[in-house]
Length: 430
Image 1: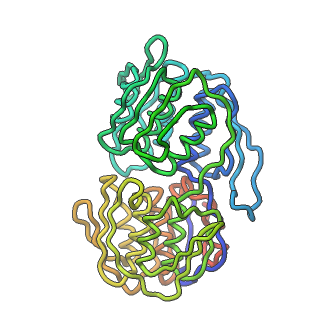
Image 2: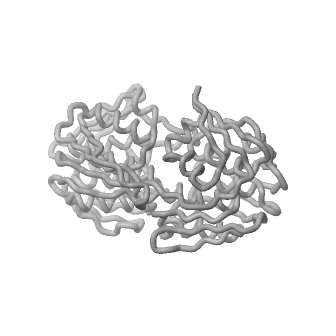
Image 3: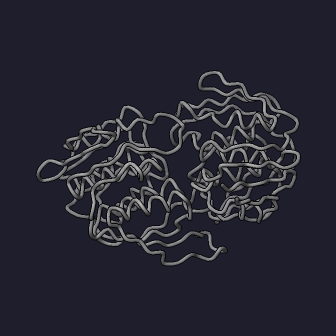
């Protein structure tokens, strides 16, 4: 099992290229199931989750081919991948595949909409909360789907003639349920209105791709979406939006370690709340035409309180990274997690490095310390893994992070990117 070792104490200087967003790439890949025409996705990140989903889509009959990788000097760094779902050979997504990654559950909606039926295992993925799929299923039921749960599987069937447009009113924001509702509605007969839709940039990216494929969607980027169903969707070419979570992670890395780094391809408009918060900690952030420049010239980090919220609030996917930053802040910060009920598993690992963190329900109270010390730590989920790396940037001595398969799920070439700006980091394979 691979591990990474980081020796703290080096500032970060240079340029880092931002990859395509994992949280957009996965649902974009799944939209290929909606059409029998090719869908070509540019700026695709090279991640373990992408590889896993490629295998799952292949089980349904989707063929894919890598058409090229852009030069590292280009802001669009990722691969270009063509997906062809001309022939769907299987409408079942088995447990052994879906259990590896929660997002693979989203194949339910396009299979149901296009083929009229689907049998999909209940999802797996990071253990950061129960994250029930009730909202996903209620959305499909609102379009006429008949749904049963049997032996850990969702068995869905469309009525004769296909799904029919309806009103979907989400009682709470759910990115996954919004993806499913949006994909199903594109092929449902008549009009569908989605109220309380998630507004995350990744949802917007998927909606814009669907429009390129021939979908009729109004209200993109707002909580209220109106979709006029079409008989079929066509092919398209679309570039995956830049990863705002990777961007926020690297901004906080510089805020922690100090230095001067340009994040090429970063989009500040997808991360305004987090940028505002990080600026209050003492980092200087300058938005430029081709990306974001981050400068941190002194060692003082100011303690700031944060509450995670659906977009455009502070992202839950940056909570662990921000906690790592606050570990070295001057004073006490309070970090409240309102999205997932079990997303503080990184606390005990940060404590091994010398952090002082007290948990009170959904809130972590972080008292900043003067110094951290390298230790052996273990990644517990995708975002927690990189929070340990951020803390290791300033820890005295060497920090060894194990179980980094979590890291590989969502961060492309992290060691290469860190090493390129002066971080002393290496991967150790056994």
